[in-house]
Length: 305
Image 1 (cartoon, rainbow, N blue to C red):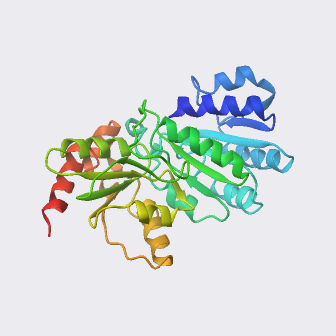
Image 2: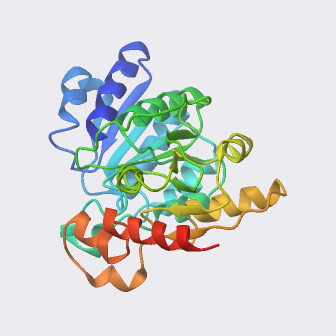
């Protein structure tokens, strides 16, 4: 997804000379393509995320469209006050791009997990939140956030995520997309974990038809389209995030406002594993977010009346 991001950002920057890119002394192997092409619109701000976010706000205030890029925990938790006061308070067109969202940097331990980021961003005013599932959705949400001209947070994977084929068109690009069709059970997911969900659905396809829906835009949530798209009474929400404040919370809050009853099971990153270090696949398995764990949960739900 990060390769799709930088490619799309360069294409946007070729058309819009307001676009700038800031990074906090990382992203090497990715950001150089932008820096080489637009050196006057690229800033490496060093290990100073609070200053980087305030610089981005200043650039936006002066008419630029800055994108801030870093590992998931750094452009969120380390500079939350600057995002709140400098960016969101002034409703500025700064797009925060985090790479390795969820457990993408699992081998570096809990300090580098991005598993509370969506909850933190959802608490702030004026900001749209995106968690695309594949490179195609990354391109869509990047274009959408740029067009909106408001604060935005984009959460990306980093481990070579493939494009996931869709069975239905995305009526609202970057909003809601059906990945597999089915009526026995519906899985709602956002981010790179959606690939595991489609694999689980495929594993069960000889016995059950399972619908998988990707929700790349978590805030604002497209409630009516999502409601109309769901085909099953049994719903499983899957997210590479802690239990509180993420995708499931957004779904419940928005469906409640729309007076739509919704009951679902929820798979998320369990807090007991924060002292664990390992690959993303290993850490996912601890919370049942690997394909085997998803298949197990789906079977349990399907066996219930």
